[in-house]
Length: 170
Image (cartoon, rainbow, N blue to C red; front, side):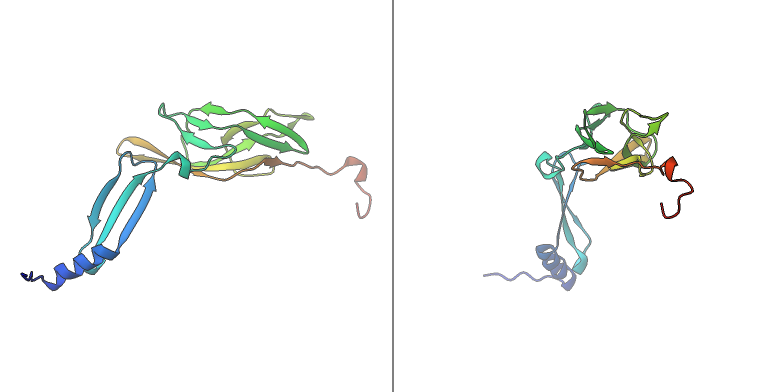
């Protein structure tokens, strides 16, 4: 049996590679890849995997970016002051700026507005379903989606009753 002599640095690198693994799943990765980073005791095997559909969120108001660079939002349900509404799926252009993608509906002139998806600050009339980050890098627009799990979007709007104005403890 022959002996192989290694430097301490090479030995440390091999030992670190046998123990240090970093596995990441990303929607930006199209094919699996393996790379080594660092040397010595800080060496690491990096395994990059594409995100599988089964591993992601698959509930109401699922937000994805399709191959035509359109924002797809799956259907879901809205409870609006006790009124239970089915909300159909939506297909729209991705936003130009980062922010919260909200399901919005409010009362205007005594009537509810049609529910719509738009970038807005979460509020009583804007229920957040995802956070969208838009970055410009090397002349290309990159869009990242952080999904918020939603069973039912809830919008509750209330105002003080005009009949109670001036009544103590009302």
